[in-house]
Image 1 (cartoon, helix red, strand yellow):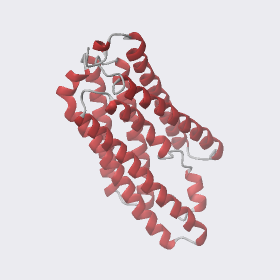
Image 2: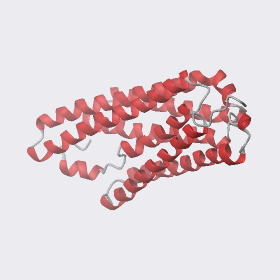
Image 3: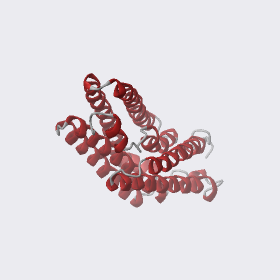
Length: 261
């Protein structure tokens, strides 16, 4: 393949994997700190943190194996580069599980603060659609041979997944900011600083995860001939637990905030 450019194919994916592994270290540290600081949290939250971390590890193994397939097993065979490794299809599934579970968790926090089901139900529905779409992508990824063939038939589904995920992130962020701001108006001085930090953190993380999804979508839609979109994808899956700071102790919020949300 005279037109083969490793810098925007293998190089782009390899950089994405390295960044993803660095964020995995952040997630693992946060998980360790969470279990040490919040031993009295409900078991359902502890189990959810464990499931998220296990899915993170499984996702890391899958993208690492895919990199091995591309750079070692298919060494000097660039014509095989666009074959779909089965572990890459599995990584899509684990990414969908991670993102959906984190979004469901924060949607539940919205319900805890607002006591209203309108926005949480909308967010839960979008999370379910994202998870369902990830399952479909994984199943057809196992049955199809090449990435270009998959893109031809199922590009619309990948575009929809990233669009739904980004929209859901923005909905969660905007809603949390709105309700936290309302809590600030009735909070005492001891809790105002905490609420301000939560508002700033919610805006930052909502923007980051939404932007990651949009960047992946744009790269996928405009650059089918390289793997820049794939490098963005493996990083975006790691942003939810690491940048979203998933291990938030419910007991801490109850002790420092007038609301249990």
